[in-house]
Image (cartoon, rainbow, N blue to C red; front, top):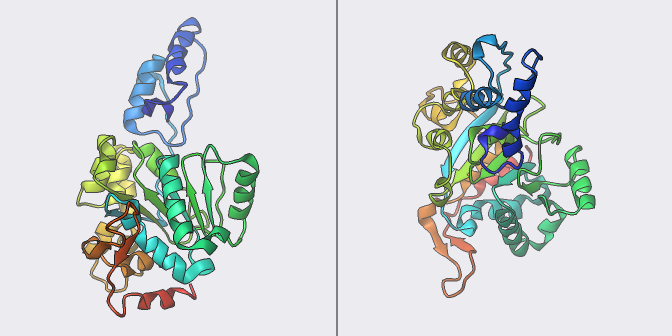
Length: 314
């Protein structure tokens, strides 16, 4: 997937592989990728000087049927966008469903972490940061905790929390600010639900975060048809997409399919219930209007958090 990122350090040297192949034209060449879109595939073949007619493709779908895709537009302010998280974490504490929150930068990771821990001091016991600047011993501790049913509830991370990580007992991932390309989006959402249980990937974005996104990611966010189909179309041929469509479960596919479903029995996962409990952006009001604080105050209906108690035993 490296050919799809402008900032990859090895991009320059990857191009020289085409020159190497020209020196050994009869050598068998094997190219592997965990998440390769059709666009990246064309670029890789071009750079390597490979004729598609002479290639044998072996594809495994990146589609994980147990992961539901949900997209929400949020306020630009981190405090407003993550107020629901602070409120529900403060209520549930160690009972909060284990969740990985991916951000595009260390700055965003730190901002959300500081917001949570300053508002809820004891959250230091079950909230951690993981990024390239995290000390090695802390990384090891976090990885160990993610590998078992520990007290760790929330991990705020950049892409440094990568493919080699096996996150257990986790069926919720939040993407705060979508990655630039769909390959990274697939990888980040695929970190959860490895037990096969129903899981959800919540993609939160604001207008500012959309500026640098690839067209494919913008389409995923804004298109008003099945998000899974929109995402998988980047990886599959038309014939392969027919197989994907046959496997769709409208009850647990994406937020758009859920809106179209009329069964009346669709079940929201715990993290979805928690997000839906919080007032909308329109009810937000700055708590410290005379300061620079991003802490946001919401005016709640009296029964707004009634669903929190429903989630405590889940």
